[in-house]
Length: 305
Image 1: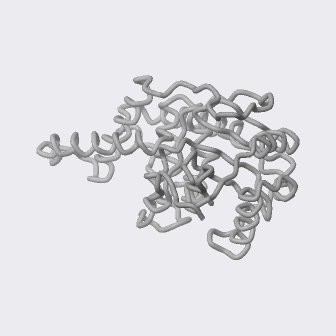
Image 2 (image 1 turned 120 degrees about the vertical axis):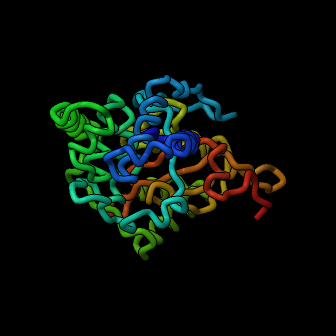
């Protein structure tokens, strides 16, 4: 709901504290323990979304690099990836729906495209869609959690689904990604790492789809299409910047800690890249701030290679 691993951590703590303080009255509740806890968590998320504690967009802050004109400025600037390591043990297992009425499998419901699309919906619609279509709660249960009517829940769900269809990138002609950890995924990742670390623009472009997309929250700059993305990457490589990449995973997708090589060879963390794959190509890359590296168990710097 929050699109932020840091905000989620804070809200989980608020939820558990509120549940502990109210547990004495739980026996009077008619809902199951699971429903009761999700009601508390959902309302804490709604409070966070309505409080306006979203971060503002940031200016371009890459030294010695003059970026090309962006294709557009993005709507969603407060977004963070989620470490796959924290998803281990989630009920139902990877790829399994979490409830009888769930419309989205776990892999889709944690993808960056899905989470990004949610961030432009009204908070109440986000809550209803996640509770109904991702977690599989019945309309009557969601109505009780949000203290509204079933008709209100059904109406909000209808509007949320329609808005989500407009926000999600079109899938026509786009191949599904290879399975996580498969030889096919490993091959694409290896080619990307080789191209990026050697600043080989031609090799990198050969890996990209025609409709490839790059964004950099909380900077609003977005580049859409092969030509625009190629110009953007050329601006990074042309400035003489050289990188080392350390693999990890985020939102069920390949990801890398990016380290800028200093003259002494030491790599200093400058961001986290998350790739979206389509067949044997890369259709999106999102660059996040270096402050997220510790969430993925990655160091702030790495020794000279």
